[in-house]
Length: 224
Picture 1 (tube, one colour):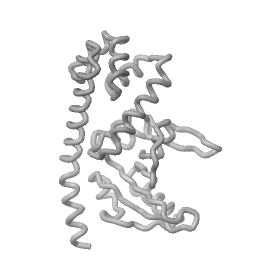
Picture 2 (tube, one colour):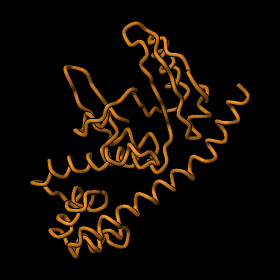
Picture 3 (tube, one colour):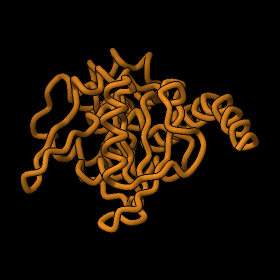
Picture 4 (cartoon, helix red, strand yellow):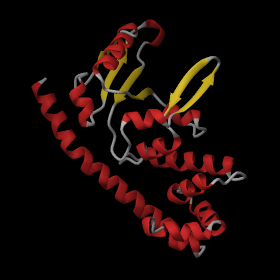
């Protein structure tokens, strides 16, 4: 669900770890513990590896000690802000095969939602993910793709282009996305301002979401 998923989707990002979203059921977490044991992975920070913390929205962090993957970090989550429950994520996942290995990724739409964080590094990657999807699929503009582009594109010139071509649908979606109003008028600079405000609001929402979770982590660190 992180940087490596972005690489698969064509928005290259240097990633020092592997980020996974997992089903936090008892049986599945037992399977995950077995996999961690094979990797000689140890829990390296708070919180501990427990379904309670995963269900609260925390990330749990591991460092691998097996010689084949020495030092590799694994971060897992089960619940994310603004992102659907695991069962829905799994139902609409993207599955690709590379050299005989099967990789299940968050769908692009879900990955986009997961990247709307307070972290500076996520926003350029988010923009690139959407650019790649639009430029790759522009010759085949299905209704679902048009809606996705109008709702999510973060490149002013491209959003103006889509809104101009699909003006009727852009007007339908405008109440939910104010940036479409200047896009319909071809005002690239005004679109850029509107997108900056969207980003500011998402960052602030992410900060509010993490505030109580950060307090829990601070309490756990003091206990440790």
